[in-house]
Image 1 (cartoon, helix red, strand yellow):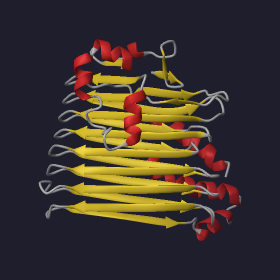
Image 2 (cartoon, rainbow, N blue to C red):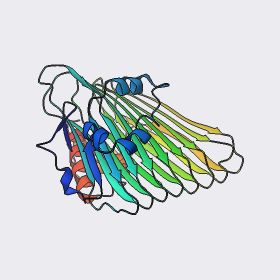
Image 3 (cartoon, rainbow, N blue to C red):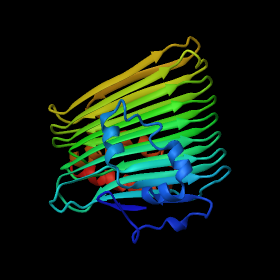
Image 4 (cartoon, rainbow, N blue to C red):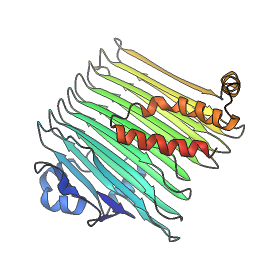
Length: 346
């Protein structure tokens, strides 16, 4: 499904490539053809009362995507939502709304990407709501490579039922100012949630990641790993919260944020947090901020590798752990190539 400047492009999209029992529609069509299920879920999880950007999206969203996967369905190929910005010097704003409803015992992979064709300022304010049925598996990749004049705000709200698994990898390379809000509610027993992210910022970019993982029921597990590389005068924020409710005994929850600063002017603010109201849990959190290892650089240079190439190799090795979490080889290789290009530019 392809969207240009926030509007669905029927000529560039191929929703019919999916099996017939799966519904993949743009938002206006879904409101007409799947009225009941859309009205049951849309705007029911991402709070427009507490988040002003969600309220803005709810008020002004003119288009978006709805994916409905029925019970006991395995979708082999990933579903790709491609948002393309082509401002061509004319500023614009878009508020895409995305709804994924995955039935029990079903599995689907969803790629959400943001790219650009031309320079110019614009504002993307996306809201994604994901409903994971019992024992379902959802693999989610969000790839953001907007131009350096773009403002990108993204809110993703995930609701998990018992036995469901949610895996997400968030990658941020572009944008002038970027803010990602990822909120996951583990609302059943034996849920698994894996949150991974990588951000690469240079120049005067600012990339902001906020996560909130809410353990509402017992016997569930969450893992968070976010890594960032910042250079020049770039800045970043990681604010992650693990919230364990009183009834969520036997919870395992882990959170880690690791950062490389490549200049004296780069800045990262890291704030991992635990809010635990149960007494039989295993929860850890941590953060590291450092620079490239001079001994490792020296080792590589002694083997005939140039200083620039050695720095690129070490940065890529630092980030590679996140890329390995992408389950589709072609997608993984594409991401690796794009990141390598960014790193080689310094």
